[in-house]
Length: 111
Length: 118
Image 1 (cartoon, each protein chain N blue to C red):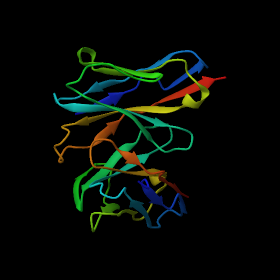
Image 2: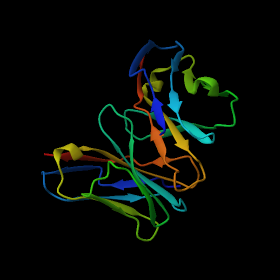
Image 3: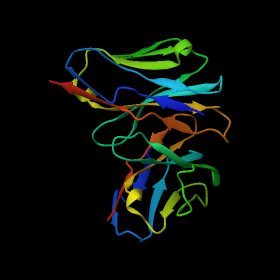
């Protein structure tokens, strides 16, 4: 069990640029979640996958956000035309039951 | 709609004191799971416990205990004989319709920041 890996750990970008984050879940975990956490808040649900199928997207996920899990293993979260309000920690979690295993997150700073 | 409320934003206690973190939830479902997660300063969320809505037995794990009361929609977490290493942000969370993959997402409260003072 190598844990959930997220890459990069930190990302600084200028407003208007596109960014992409990667999440490698624990192998054999069929469900993968993306959450966003801002300072002083709990994780907010963004979207989740059952294998390669994206089953639900939060209304927080605007058209600038897209997530994929093409082969049911790793997942990517892309933010296009970043805005300062996108600055947050982006957390990935995986599970095969209801116990979520979280990665260390990608801290995004939009300047 | 499901909702989790952690009214205590920040608590400070002196080491060895007992401390209780409150959690109140709202859900339309009769079947759901409740969780507690710990987020230490390193940032990674750590699973502590999961409780099925049909199991109202309280649980104890070492210095940790959980009190689930459906009548008041509460799932409180108590740390006895607190230690400095318990300092972290603690999140209560709720999942409705477990097993129904179309609705199977976990919603978190805003967290309680716990400071254990030496």
